[in-house]
Amino acid sequence: MIQQICLAIVLALFVMRAPSAIRQGKTRATWFATGAGLLSLFTLGFVIPAGTLDAALGGTNLLTLLRDVCGTISFWFFRDALGEYSGASYRLRSPLFLLGLLGTSTILFLAIPNRGTTSENFIAAHISDTATWLYATIYILGIAALAIDACWMVRRRLKSVLIVFVLGSAIAVLGCLAEARYLALAHFGVGGAGYAYAHENDSTFPFYLGTILIVCGIGGVALSSRISGLQLGWRLTCRRLQRIETRCKLELGIHAEDRIGGPYDRPQDRAYATLVNLRNWEVLHPDVIRLGDHKVISRASAAFSSIQAIAAR
Amino acid sequence: MNIADAAVEAAGIQPGMSWSQLHQAVATAFGHPITIAPTAERIPPTITGLTLYKKDHAQILFKRTDDALYSGHSILHEFGHILLDSFACSAQAGAISNDLSNGVIRVRTRELDLDSMDPLARVTEDAAERIAFLLARAVYGRQFTPEEMFFG
Image (cartoon, rainbow over all chains, first blue to last red; front, side, top):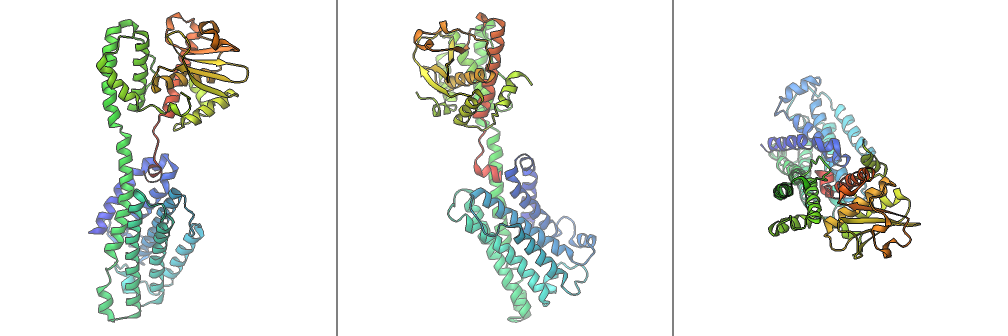
């Protein structure tokens, strides 16, 4: 269930952030991260059965490799975005690390003997093979290394959404460690097959909970950014100012000359132009603005006060 | 593209600029320093801001009694005149007090009494006002937080 929730959130986030990723280069790293994560989650077979997907890749469980490669890439881009955002120097930055990780995983995966036909529990079924154990362990510890690196580089800059990212990464790391433990138990037969089987799904909840937290952190920023972009407060202010403007126009008649440069897409720009227009009329016709309207005008004007930065008053 | 848009583009004005960056960009386009200060001198009531071009710099004056938005807009309008680098003046040095006109080569103003202007000065005035609105969009444009830039 938690995997389906994760898929739904990542899909929504990927679609919602597509326009800003196209427009603004800095948002692309996290968008790529959600894209790779989406692809990884897609291979779990909730939308199209995993068997069908794997059959399209030749029916030799390459779907497992694709899932893990996408997962690694996803965490790589997430870590990369965090590094860019925090301005921290980080050690595993070189793309060679990613290529080395993916290359090693791929070679080990291809070295697994008798991969057989499509299996939803491919790793568990082949865990006795050393290549399978090494492949799965390197993959999961690679993700853990990226998540730990992400936490480490922002450890002194913990604020706002970074706290959510660090918490999510830390929980995901716990999931990774639980998975690595299960892989070792199962491969080396510690405690018997039953004991290992009992721990097979230990990683699922923490890993996906951590991932969901990270994704929700990104989603929260993306959503609040879009809500503030609507400028709801400015829309209201604009409407009030335009009511004053309309009344003044009626009073001034042909003397109400507009000097508004437009058109304006943003309510704040429209409000600015209306305020300038009203002040122009006030200079030319001192009594045109009523006493009650001054309050609305002053309050709106106060938002445009950064001029003091350059003018010595 | 009209002359106002072209002048703004040529000066490299970008959305999200701070006032200081804008000031610097206009001064660079002008090629001389630009000082900005309020004035209590007698200037006609319909003039809300003016630029005094001197030998090696320009001085923008705005009315001390105007609020930040309106004086800011007057300054942006004067930036518009500077960017346009036009020779059509809406007011001559005689329209201002003697104290201000000392050493002044040329004057630009933000004049609200458009009916008194000759057609050429009116065109210049309108272009400078259009630039003022364009510059206002640049300095008052939406500022994205670092979080929005990376995760928004």
